[in-house]
Image (cartoon, rainbow, N blue to C red; front, side, top):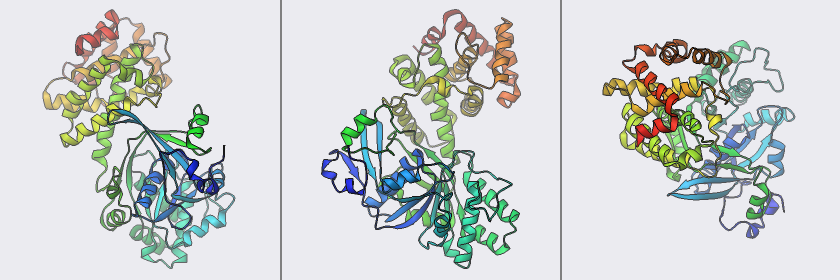
Length: 492
């Protein structure tokens, strides 16, 4: 099987007939600098840029920088920046696979072995956007980093050094600032990145003019990214290579669904809308002055649906989200919880919320993703506080009563944390607390103790009208009759 290279690309007649192939990547200018060569960005932003290029809406390449010492840039260069993305999921009620050969990446740079090449990126007048995904821990201040390091260790320090080189080379030209689009999974990622960059500027005693240039000529956006990327399909790679007609060591798989929100205002929003017109390419991405409502929608509906269902499903003998979705009882459980309880608790456009919720059902039913319930169950106490409890509280305020399914899900959490032969994946202090409470044999006292943990829930849930009493009643039924019977009684 021939490896994926430019030479192989010239033999595209032997490729899979339904493979979409982007425009050749050698002639375009490098307009985007990307920190991170992992599966997520390659299956998300780089995929979108590839479509923009194909539709003649961008005409630019991405140059990828490896943010840590060990990475994939050598492999990326061996394949001339080419790689394949397989999108797999439910679309129009059918299992669907979309194959695309991505050509939007020009090259990869390892700053640990090619520091001068990396620094020279700052002198490219065509670079305008900086995209990153350096993991949640990537945007951090490292006290030992110096401007003279080649390179500094942290991502923000590398950025500060690069910005300083650019500022100096272009004599502080206001048109040569960068628009940053950090995709790290932390709140307000752009604000955090800017904060750390300015911290380095101060520590390194860089000029006031340089700091003013960062503040006035650079823009740090906050973002929301949403696509499940399952990465390199090790168990299927030979079969996929036969189908594609070539072998690809950077092959990545992901779900079809995607959503990308970029928070920007003023000149930066104008520049993003003009230069990266995602909506014109029918990409589900927007530039907005506030990403918070979209984050709230995702946390409450997508993440909340996971947390409100997986513990109950596990106690009913399910192992994966797909198994749960194939059970008509849990399909109704989720439908009722999302549409009758979570959506009414939100002050957002109902039509938009329902459309997003319908996409969630398709995503959960994706036959190509084996998502284990025990993986989602990790740290369920913290997840419940962030994802489900706010919906219960808002529903109760609006309706004057407790939401049935969401209240049941809290009882399911207590039942799951009993253990009963399965591992409870959470902090040892939390696990031990539940173990000790279950030892008392008094469910009412157990519920009262759990609800009273203000450090878990941010408030005393014993003060929520009728909540502890209802949880006690449901938990007693679970203990007597089992989770399946309790859900059937409520749902059917």
